Image 1: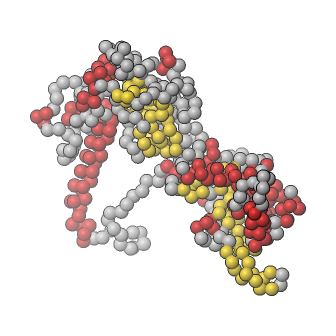
Image 2: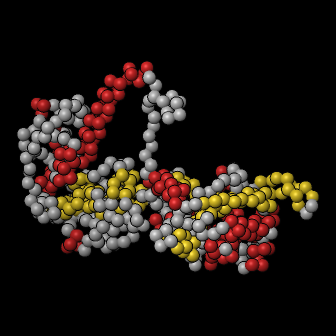
Length: 477
């Protein structure tokens, strides 16, 4: 006798409360092994493959690709245990996690280490037998009568079947969640054509019926209002006419996390910005000399960002006020001993800020190598949540976009961010004469609660001095 077990979206850590389904890795009817990845989800931090703690046959999936689910919401159900009459056939290998040492709701890289199963399907006739005979969570499946609630007349949606084809037998539904969802939205399950094996009604079928009904109702209402809207165009608050229809883009995933963090920064942090132009000619010459070195002792090429990061760690050692955070509840400034340096990286998924751990203990080459490694992970969407959190100071090189300056928004809950514009030839007074030099604009946004303008100005001036004369850095370390 098989059991149908429900696997819920596990706690993904780092305070994450929801995730978006990016890609299903299994289909209904597939045989899965313990700890086999079944779905790829996107959180506000990273892309994660979620392994299933049960081995058996997938009987239902909850949520289409692109659906956002909260932690604890059902992901899928698995029929655990061999269906009757299938022993020795080799067509199903599901087993109860209690008897096989299942690991529970875990993420990739943790668990029992069971070998990944070859993706297989149970024949529809055996899947039907396993599902219909299986108790849910150890309890027998009882067909509850459908209680007809008062209905609001609405157009019949496409997924409903004709009146004459309504079945008089039991409704082919396994999941209690599907039944509850149908009741909440007044969907008659007897009128739905299931897309699962042998007509099994899945949550996707109910979701599709709900969406179709809502779209039909919206289209009907819009059609009724069309003549009025054609005569009276919609107007924005400033009086400018706008289009009736507009694209709406949900703020979720990385974009939503960035929006929340930036809004919180602007709301909670009383920030101020100061900036200075600096002659980066000598810095560029030093970089060229470092990268020109050859031989066994020559390390990897050093980037401008790596040199600026090394300058930042030296500046933070002299001005530790900017390597801190504010505990608003305790009304205390928390000064941090180590520097975990974040750097802004633009990817196809949006802006992310990987963190170089213990940057204060690294030289320019080590920082550069770590920046290169994290950047590659960011571009491929493989950064873990731990690699995107815990920063104490952020460096933002927006010069790569071809702009000279900006006013950075502090990466909450940090206390400061240094912005770097493009380095380009400009007229500059050098040693009393007008010359063409490589000039860069540096801007520092800081939390005015942790320090005053004198400290912020001292930090920025020290950074500029190191850019103009890299020997300053050698004298102070």
